Length: 214
Image (cartoon, rainbow, N blue to C red; front, side, top):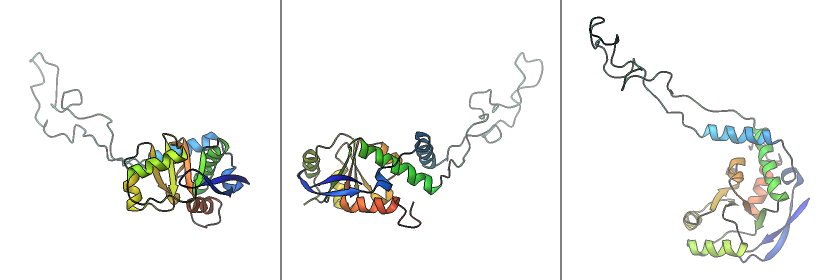
């Protein structure tokens, strides 16, 4: 097992914790991670886009001019797709973009992503993330003490209203619950920071000890 230091709010070592090899020392093909991330992004799409065909556009029931002897090209409707304000040919219609990915694949991809952060020394653990009051300046001081990068995801067990208020205006830092962490969310970061409780939760979620958890 790998061991990482547990830091306090001042960036000082407050202990150490072991990382389970089953979660933080895993390799997976990049194609698998690509599949999982692509499916995740596709599943975020609402698919409500819609265009009107020539039969759905208002108007156009009357032939604009007679068939012959006008000098114009023949036309049967002012809503032809060839005309301005006409219907759309083969335009998008509401549809589902959902891509089903087996939970085992999602877990493996996330384990591989977390393992890459550990291998690169970009995963840190803190004893807790508590603020005396919901102030952004306190978050800034905390981030400076831990020497966090400009793109950091802090994984916690729960996001309280005070914590959400204090961090929402701090650029470059995003909060995420351990139960909500995805491969995509992790890959958006240059550095991951876990609280000890969140680390235990993500380990239980990914090592298979908690049945039915994705």
